[in-house]
Image (cartoon, rainbow, N blue to C red; front, side):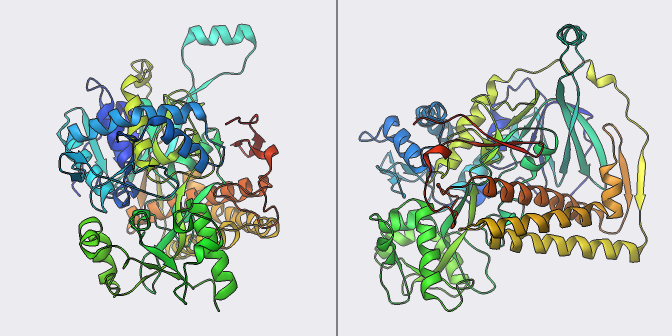
Length: 575
């Protein structure tokens, strides 16, 4: 990819180019200079993989109030009702905005086509065949590339937030009078691009980096989903929430050599059956709604059934039978699923699909308000990276793309600090890192070993079912991994960099190696946060299931909050 000149300062930096980042960039005032940063290209994100659709109460027989109640019920009473009301009430107008931008949702005649997904009481999921995410992100990308005020910086990696004390002398005078500690503000980011680390100032930074599914050995997420935004915000002092709540999608294609390709929930909504080796619809043994129970229930039903019936539960699967759906409807609604299954030797018209649960969506994230503000001035978060309160303990199907659009639209109202005074601060002297071939090969091997070890450890100890002994053992292992990581010469160099201190590298294949280092660091933090949050919550609720605490406890109808390795509970939530 050709090198481009990056300005030293933007009005707003948006990190991440999925639906949340793209729509945020489009909604920011066109008078602002916006930098849109993605570590891959604008065509690769978890949003692009989203199949099912986007939920909105647009049918005459539906209403935002029904959407609200379905969302709160699926969220195991841990949703922020005010945030859910905002999401559901804004949904129809946001859908219209997408249509106006050119998103081609499926239609019945002139009316938008709507399908049913699990835990929805009405058909309210809009779709574009079975590639809704791709249709949305492709349309948004085309719009972004037309905007003169948006500079897209591809294959660039945000390493850390640039945090410094507030510089307003009036504020400083007030604080000294009140004997208060100085406040800190996000001033920008450190960016690895084209072999160098630079520091870029911004009046605001918006994290829209998606989830962290790659911390699990089995996930439907793409390789880019390494929890980057959550990790770098945590290290900067942001407050995080509900990190134990991970949604495991019940039906991911499970075949030797194949990625865990998601088989959309809409398949079951259209009438597919979930069966075991005997062809029995076993999901009804676990919930009256069978295949259409909430995702966490169906995932645990499959997990429990395989634990009881499979010779090797770790590699076993059940079957998703699409044959009850008329063949013409399968061809119309699920062309991409047909194509991928055919690639892996599965004919969906004549045989069921082997499926098992996989990590899919992270309900927790960086605490934000309805304006996407975090506890750090100048820092915002949108999409799966954020914890807005709309998902609770278990996200309702197809509310994820909706959240990206509804909350991305809020960035039209951003209030920027005056960054003119900040731009005069000079950069420090350039530092350089080099290593001979043998030294570097040893470091590379250690990084790769850590990168492979982490997902297996987290899947085994904090997957669909958890318990204290396994969590504690994994936490101790992670502590040892942190020490090994910090001892690497590359870590010692990078972790000693100060704000405004650029760096250069004399290393082979430096782009790939720096990305490996940064993602491994982020995954270590994400793994530690999920494990400790799961150990902290001594009950089962939504996407968090404890074998040693299998019941939901009303005393735990609270959020789990964490900041700088300190965990605490929110006040009780009344829904």
